[in-house]
Structure formats: structure tokens, C-alpha cells
Image (cartoon, rainbow, N blue to C red):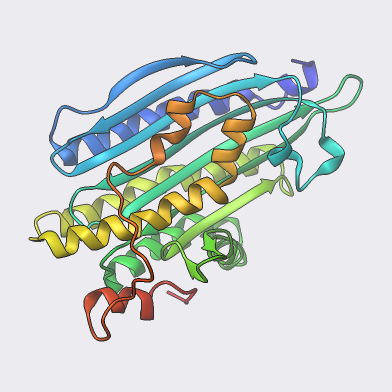
Length: 305
């Protein structure tokens, strides 16, 4: 790593991310009340590695993963340089935390969060860095108050960085987590940002921390509010059907999944985001006036919160 890259204090970012993983796993373990997360230490083919933490069969969480990684490679994968082709061929270092939580109760939404730093290097030139991340919510049976709470936390995280930040990254989230082949959003959105380096390194790192630190504040109150709601086979079957959309997005569009596979990452860690049980039905549509139709009619489209 060049002296210029060291000046970016990548080590401080890695230490923050490891602590974030610890705090998120602890918060989720506490509310789940089960045996907690299993930890695997991983190695990356190009150098570096990470800590994969997975919880399966919990009291509340049917399957969840919270992964930290810090990896290196000789050349940026195509997905990482697609928006910045001038960086193609540069060596890279990438570090981040990525998580997906699939609760058992269909009334608790699935949630996803990711925060990350990329540094691309070329001999004789200054390193190019950028941050990315965000978090989004995927309800199966949506509640307006939950969605508003989620977005209120998003707004609060963004507020110190400018009035335009929440509207900009909220819109980006709506556009990114959109299944073009279905004509619907994956869920009710939140925040998404990538290739962010328009501020100083320190300010951008501060913003990434504000986002990462807000995840539990956004998600745990929703779990607490919905975890004791009763459900039956109808609700579970619909949850499994909607989880199919999650799989479709992650395998077709998700840049993190594609980057991990293209860069030679550990497949088990990359695909920990997959839900444990999924259903696909041919040409299915909800009956008008049902709670399932309410999701389609009122939530699977961009809206202001």
C-alpha cells in the first residue's frame, strides 16, 4: 500500500467496521434471545479475508448474516469499474460490512444494510477512493408507522451532512432496489449511495459511520413491535413468495453479490443473503382488498415518507 493510501487511514475504517459488526450482532442476538451468531474466519484468494457471522433457526431470526471483509486484488472486477471505466485494471482494496436479516415472523420485515470503502491504486498515481452503502427495508405485510419510523431514522442520519442528502440518497435507493423485470420496488427503500467521494475523506467516513450506526435504531423497534404478532400458513406462504423477489434481485442486479463472485470471494459468505425458504408461483396476483394486495397497491412503488 502506498504512503498516499496510508494517509487515507484505511485502518481506522477497518477498525470501525469490525466494531460495527460486533455491535450489530450483539443487538440482534439480544433481541433474538437464542444461541447467537456462528463465526467463520475467511480468506480471500487475492489477499485479506473477513469474519462471516450467521444465525440460523433463532427465536426471531430464521436466517441472518452479518459479514465483515477486508480484501485485496490485482485488478478491479468489472462490476466495480462499470461506472468508472478509467479505473479498470487498477489494483484495489475493499473493506465493508454487509448484512441481511430474514425473520421467521412474516409481520417482521427483512432488512439489509451495507457500508464499504474501496481504494483503487496504480503505480505512480494517487489512489482513488470512494465510500458506499445504505440500508433498506423489505416488508411482507407493511405498516405505515414502521415505514415512517425507518425513513425518519434515515433522515436523521443524513441531516448533519446537508438538506439534499436524504432526498438524493432516498431516491437512489428507490431506483437501485427496483426489479425492472417485475416493475416493482424490492421494498420500501431507505438509503443507498455509491462512488461517494465528493466530500473530504474524513467527512465521507463520518457519513458512512452515521449510516452504519443508525441501522439498529431503525430496525430493532420494528422487530420489538411485530415479534409477538400471530401468523399462520397463509402469511408464511406469502412471505416465501415475496422472498423470491429478494432472490431475483440479489442474483440479477445486486452489485455487491456480483462483485463478490467476480472477485473470487467466498461463495458461502456472498450468498448468505439468500432466504432459507422461498416459493415461486406461476402468474400469481393477490386478491383485491386483501392485506397482500395492500403491499402491492401502496408500498411497492416509490413514495414520500
